[in-house]
Length: 303
Image (cartoon, rainbow, N blue to C red; front, top):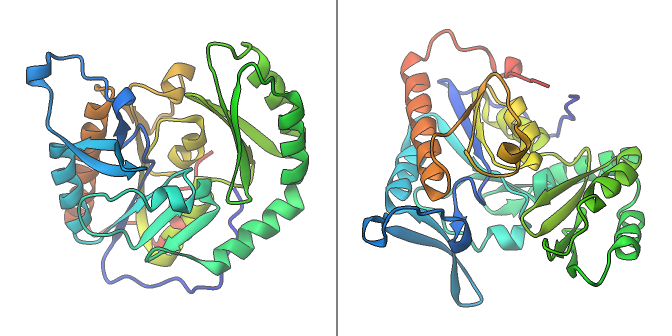
């Protein structure tokens, strides 16, 4: 995949840097409906709420996962990058344990946040690619509104003026509707992803992997680790040197696999804990190994 350089110069780190880019929803954090706690209630793990919405708790991690994330963010020469399809507003509702992330990726790669603020150079890079390579958001949104049936459409939304999504009643959604939408969107440079009750329609150049590579360039990262559960995370996992996906989710349902991507033994909130253990173990091993790591420009790029 072609990278589009931004104006910020690449740093020269004193020691090898490991970048850890992880999806959030149903990868690290979980709503009550997604927890998947099969054990008796008395044996369920203690949970920590990490997101409140309209005055109510919304997303959780286990207390063990919270401690692991705090350890990960304190690991020397490790850069933890929350990487999400959420808008910036939705991302800022989340309060993860551990050291605050210097970098975060929002809107499926549309925004790189640096200390909480969107980087304007990256915004211009993204806007240029979308204008050159894709049909307009207005055209796609008009088609969505015309094609959707009020019998199953609950909400229609635009995120950050970058992509659109529908909230639907899955029980009423025709089984082939999403495939038909994808066939319409593909020649126009857009992709379609069904996640839970949401149907995302996203410009093809708008990817988490492109934003991850830019953060890797800026931080001088020599190793990239990634995790994610949905089809919108596939490019992120393929671009990383090592990856993990939960035993649940859109990728699991599709039977998606890659040689360097491992599947967790656990599902639900326990998978988030397992992923953090893998991140931490690998980051510490890399920090100890040190010598012999490739230069930043050779960060793995896979298809």
